[in-house]
Structures are given as structure tokens and as C-alpha cells.
Amino acid sequence: MSEKNQNNNSKRPLSPHLTIYKPQITSVLSISHRLTGLALFVGTLILAWWIILSIYGNCDCINQIITSTPVRFFLVLWTLALYYHLLNGIRHLFWDMGKGFEIETVNKSGILVILGAVGLTLSSWFYVL
Image (cartoon, rainbow, N blue to C red; front, side, top):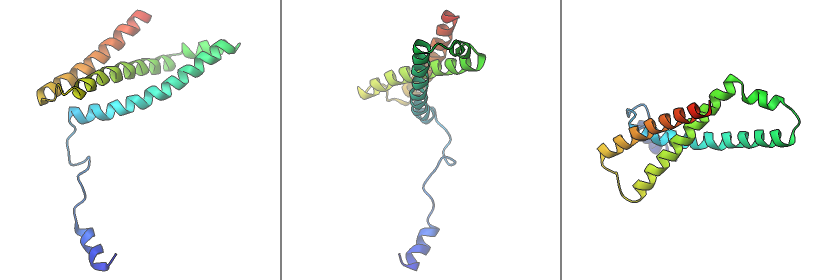
């Protein structure tokens, strides 16, 4: 690259990035959907590991670990991620059908997904406990 082109490139503005835009519910939910997918993958591996150890292992320490407060906290978060990912996935299915693209509908369905995930998580854990 010539020196002239290099100087022109250094004076160009950077492409827009996260510090320029204020977070919108659509972008926050999109990022959250991807993160919950990753969390569900890792959590499912841990859950499978726990089931295998509880079936084939003779160690009662596994059951003591699973009933500890920090592990219960992570199980509640995993349940929240599961319900959020499920409900947001259903929302995306409606989008795939071409429905719900109006800004007001997108915002309302996003809030509904969050409230639904929290409500389902609380009701599930209330039932379990």
C-alpha cells in the first residue's frame, strides 16, 4: 500500500460501534439469545455429566454438591436461560412467517418474552421446591 493511501485510511472515521448507538431492546435481546444458547450448551454438558456420575458413580458427594446454594443459583439461571431461549425462539418463528415486524409489536413481544421467561422460571422453581 502506498504512503498516500495509508494516510487517507488513517483519516477516515471508524465504522460505527457499540459506543455510538444506545442499546435497543431488539439488539439486547438478540445478544441475549446468543448468550443463552451458549449457556444452555455448557449447562447441558454439565447436567449430562452430573446424571452420568449419579448413575454410575457410588459417590454421594454429587447429590450434596447439587443441593448446595451456589449450584441451585446456577440451576435457576440455567432454567431462566432455557425459558428465555425457548420463548425468544418462538418469537423468531413468527418473524420467519413475516409477522410481528412493526416496531411497537417487536418491543411488546420482547418485553413479553422477558416477563414470560421470568414467570415460567419462578413458577417452575416454586413447583420444585
